[in-house]
Amino acid sequence: MTRRSVRFFFFIILAGLISVFAPSACAQDGLAAQTTADLNLRTGPGPEYVVIASLSAGTRVRVEGRDPTTGWVLVTTDGKRGWVSTCCIVFDAAIDLETLPLSPERGATYAEGASPDADDPPTQDAPPTPGGSTAAVTTALRMREGPSEEDAIVMILKAGATVAILERSLDGYWAHVRTAGGVEGWVSTCCLAPAGATTPPAAPPPGAGWNARTAAELNVRQGPSLAYEKLALLPPQTPVVLEARNATNGWALVHTGAGVRGWVAAAYLRFDAGVQIGDLPVADEIVAAAPASAPADSGAPGWQNRPIITVSGRAREIFLHGQTLGNNPGAISTIGDCNSDIGVYLGFFAWGQYTLGPDYQYLQPVIDHFGGSFARRSVTTWSGNHAWMVFDSTYAKPDLCKPGEAPIECEYRVNRPAVFLIEVGVNEAGTRTFADDLRAIIDFAVEKGVIPILATKADAPGGAAQGNNAIIRQIAAEYGVPLWDFGAVAETLPNNGLRADGVHLLWAPLDYTTPDALNAGHAVHNLTALMALDAVWRGAMQ
Image (cartoon, rainbow, N blue to C red):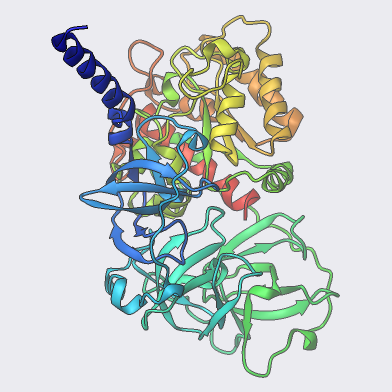
């Protein structure tokens, strides 16, 4: 072999080694994602690690690795590198977190001597919660090292203390907070209220007196157990008059100055000095629901007087089953066609492109709760989808789903949702198996502990979906699962809420202070979807 050929051979070998050991473009770039809420960037995967920076909602990041629990991912952004919780990021493309490489990278923890005061961003720069940057503690509250009752107590927060919300647990029941003095820990969200966001309601009329206040948002029910129907929702710090208790002291019969009357869980009441629930008389009264009054003619669109969502007691049973399986109470998945794609459906709420106005501002909390799912494209939604297709592996996404895995199985494994929003039927005119296919979806959802919300579809009079809407209503009643009757709503809109093609929903910006939004199928579809989710969230998941 000549010296020239040896040199050439050497360069070939060297090039091969470089191609093997040099990182690929994918490894360098990572996966693109965006934060959906303000998050701390930390030196390691957990709240015990030092905060490097606070990332605002909407920050673009590159994801490079994960921890073994998939609860934290290693990211880079704007020259910074660290770990963030997966609770509040959304990927540009669907991804199974378990496919990300495990990263051993760790930095300093506070236990190793780092000072929160020295290394953390100042308190006023702490990430804001959706309702504001701080929260008020409504009653004496234990701060713990982690998000569970088993974690060690850090300190006791006094009622009235103000804390900064740093992040929330995946189930929403715990918040990671920082005090004005820089102490961090986890507290139950039961006893936090947005600081300055809620003015305590007025006390009952003079002479009536009041004996307690609500410590958190509290459901008023017809009877003393969760089995009874809800009558109202009282905000934190609502003054109430105590009338009676049940035999176990777990529930109190109360009324407010606004005329709301019913049973509330006594654990979430803060009694006046000297008042004890055991002093109240025992009662077993079942409070009747107030009769609905006929709405005044305000010129509002006719759909506002239609029943939009029906929620039964079975929805809660399904939800509780799902929690035992580890489903995410803050996640939803869609099963639908082009009208369920994030480009026209729910995504606007994640991107901030909406105005609720005073009439619908009550829906903001449900946006805050489920918003992380609104900008995510479900594996089970695509143009032309049929109910049977979600069980056919040939329609699964090969970059996300396992070989032979059906789209609905893949979507559940990847997202672990608490709710399926199911909108199918327009593409299945005359399909004899539609009812059986829809039942199969519900059976799968119930088995996995996912609340199925069945939605009827908008269609022109005599169109394909009309007959299937009747099937959807029948099956919802048959299974006792929530029904979002958008088809009935659409019938009150101009041209049934559709464009001239009779298929696609008429578009309008989601500004619900304008008549256009309240009369266009696309905008009303999005709004009533929020109403349906809100009813299920409050009625079955709290």
